[in-house]
Image: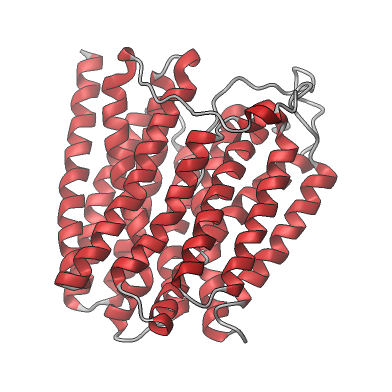
Length: 417
């Protein structure tokens, strides 16, 4: 998943930005979508891996969570690396690492290989998205950082949706179900690498190539004046990403339970119905209701999460695929708006000089929520079964979503009074 970079731009171009070509910006934006597509590519394949190698649901979710651990490591240890050594080498190097992770997937003959592949993939994704977010802000043709941030944000769910759908189709009808998705990814990544090398200029003014400072611990601090907003924003993003993580980790298992048989393509469609709608919701809100306060987007998103996850739980109870996909779509609206509203709230609340470390703390909360509940769900599944575990998760998520929406409204009432 993506992270924002709110450090001041170090773009070397003119201040007007009217003469910047659009191709470099579009190239990096496409790269973000392609890299995030790789994140969801394994999702439709997990059940096949599980059936072939005989590991438990708990192991499945820890394989998924290793990815988040890799992203967290990138966020905490090499955040801002592109500011120190330049955007291009970071984008190029992280793409090479991603291609190496696909090679690990292709060579996998046991669960240990999956752990290694997901760890490398997570680390490379975290490094790439951090540099790409900064590059998009630098390269936007009109120097519009808000639009650049929107493109970066919307590329995340859009890439996730496309990656899972294509992977599911290849796994269901392709010649090598566990290999063809990663061969396609490798080909796309090579194209992105070539395009960045050919078309994307360096935007850091005289990067120092400070290779001795590649690893630097990112401080996590929330300034006192932003703590109330941080609490509400963190609650919103935690609920949203917990749901997103559970979908990416257990979509195949949920489909198997609902249809009484595995179907990789349908598992991909589950991610499409959730993450694709999330991206559309973000773009629609930004384009049609850009003047509506971010607190409204956050509250509406939390309410939609509450309704959507309860609908999905009801679908599992009644065995209704139609209700399942409808609930997933509503959940996607909630995910997109809650994430967008929460991230904008904390960005606006944090002082500019402290914004980087505040956002780092925000995304640490997000990635912990992305991974820890999924691991717990996997462990509980081995004891109570998938459906009962999902009921518990849905009830907890619905309560937290409702509480977050109420707290958000109350905090805004305090600010307005």
